[in-house]
Length: 353
Ligand code: 2P0
Image (tube, rainbow, N blue to C red; front, side, top):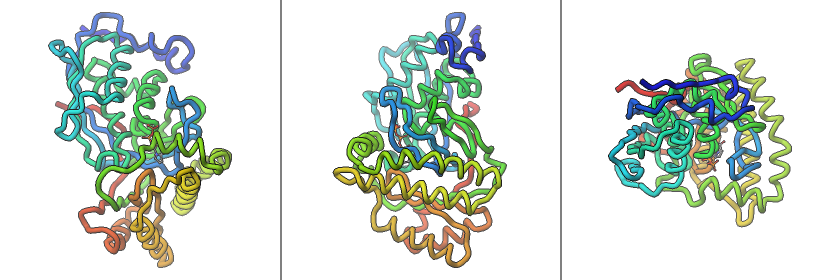
């Protein structure tokens, strides 16, 4: 039998050897296979920039909403007959993906396992387009691999060593480990649930405004911004106040206040990127058209606030009751197939076989 000796006290405080707390006391006879779902998360207060590239520690904290309908489903099988890891994404073999290997190696290290894995993953969101598929991808992979090794992911997500592993996969991925509103702490790169998905009737209307991958990866974009943007120091300095404001808005369930700080954080992040050399512009013309639509909705009394990440797509935060009005207004800039009303969703979890 698998005996997982999970000494949470040392792990929680991150003092002793965090890896030791995750190791199993007996040789693993893993359940072998597990499937996990992770929703994408959209930052309301943005993360952009790293204070430690090796550990992928963020230069700023962040606060996000995990979504129910968009995300990644991944099956991991630790297979004793394999001599190498296998990875398939959306039906295409990508065996040499370095981030997938690194994440699997991390799970093997923490779980004292040496079997290779077969990983089959599907994104229910456009890949690498600036719609956060790297976050849901890393979270789903980590949770599936952890469960396939016989571990309990709901325990692991509170553990510093596991979260470090997920964050190395993608800086925003730990936020997908929890549902609803989630905060990632700058100080230790750990993640904390702020409000469960059912606690507030929020909606995020997603407008997909381009097809195909983005030109510059977030990782490269962040490095360039930190190296060349004269506004980078100001972005870092002004950022903590946005987190304080967002927490207060959530506490008060004040959507207008939360939407306002989200738009401000978005504008400051993109201003900082635009000042990089060469400039980093993830928006396209339709991004601006969508922002005009949102401004028009607000002028007409509809509570709607927009945000953009490392891509041209616009995500509009609103109340449940206004979501249909927002979606239909956005028909002016995108075909119906590229618009979706999404809800707050659960954290990454194992799905029943
Ligand atoms: C965010 N983004 O907070 C910000 C806003 C994009 C813009 O986190 O290099 O895939 O793996 O840490 O997490 C996207 O970047 O980058 C991102 P790495 P990640 O959601």
